[in-house]
Image (cartoon, rainbow, N blue to C red):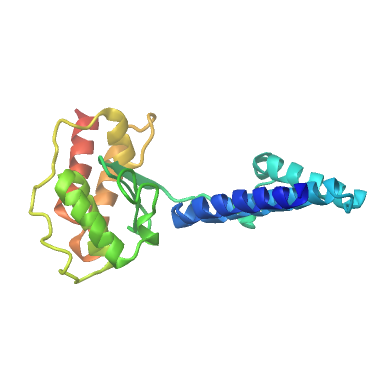
Length: 240
């Protein structure tokens, strides 16, 4: 009877953890599934050990598995090559320069080399989701949510949609020229993030970054007046 209770408890915990993993944003699920797999392996070892069916080699192997999982972040730092192999669910950071624009609901990155926009949801039903992982229907829901709560977030999402679905006007009216300038709401740290610069940036670097980004924000490349206004606002603030 005690063994059945133990098995039932393990099964219940696994089910709860599996449901929690399924509810996570797609890019976070892989790591949770790995953790769940390790947890199941440990639970099986515990069960077999309690019932006297576990060989000592199996126990040692499981201990090594758990230890390796705990040491994964250290191994990644000591051996960067492991990160490029996509082990332990880690991502390899991009070497290109990027700009960040953040609103109440969204955080958006613009790659300086490709002009590609990527974003993450900060609040709401899809909190933690990457825009790239969302379907058209989910993006439509998110747009309605942004439109009802924050104009800046709505226009940021419109910028992403214009690039991902070029020529598609069924999402709703595009933001008008000059809207969402939000002048006065940006500080120096945010301005540097918008231009993709650090505190050491001088006037020449600021002007060069501004020129490069404005070129990337041409409407034919998915840019719009809102993002251009943010870029201009950041330059004006940093140059005084």
